[in-house]
Amino acid sequence: MGDRVLTADRGERENLAAFLARAVRLDEAAVVRLRQRDDTHLVAWAATGFEALAARVVAGLIRPQDTVVAADGLLGALHAGDEVDPGYAMDSAWRGALPPDEGYVHVDDVPAAALIELARQGAEVAAEHGGPKGPPASLLAQEVLAVDGGGEHVVVSMRTVFALAAMGFVPGADTETAAVDPAELVRVRASRTWLRLDARYGSVFARRGGEIPISVL
Image 1 (cartoon, one colour):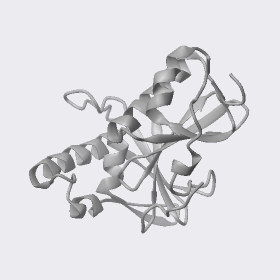
Image 2 (cartoon, helix red, strand yellow; image 1 turned 60 degrees about the vertical axis):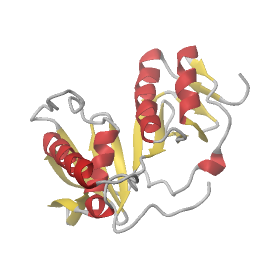
Image 3 (cartoon, helix red, strand yellow; image 1 turned 135 degrees about the vertical axis):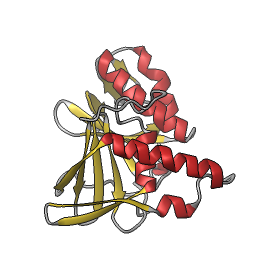
Image 4 (tube, rainbow, N blue to C red; image 1 turned 180 degrees about the vertical axis):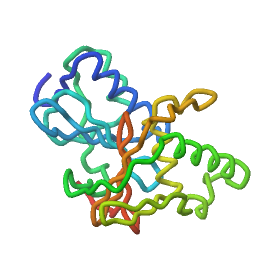
């Protein structure tokens, strides 16, 4: 298989496949960035289209330890076995800086059901007032949640809530009744420049006070 290989067991490949399927649903041409986090875990990153990044930790190994590939290609290859060719390198297709691994303070925990309800209400407004290009910019920019704690005051925009819901990171949110366990929480953390929402199945990161800066890997 050469110098490019993803190694993960069946359960972890299924977790990664769920993440990739969501990314491809948001963008058929999505790319995924895979980075080795430690000796046993890697992090998959994808843009969401909502000026936010999504990340999911998977038990496994990736070689090279930081690589970008087509999300749909990797999704199709994950059935091959515990060792998978991740596909052609597309490093130049990744745009935007990754958030740091450390340096966040715990602001507060909020009910996941409340965030999913906000996403549902936002989707209804978008369906009524949106156009060919999607939800109105004013709706996406609307600040729908303010959280204080850890010496920080952070606001969460609708676009970040949409990203969390679209990636399926909250269990139960995809059922017809959106039956999210009332005890299910989303942890809000913040650094000087990044806001992150940590849910059961993954995290969403958004720049505080601006878009993701554009750069080339």
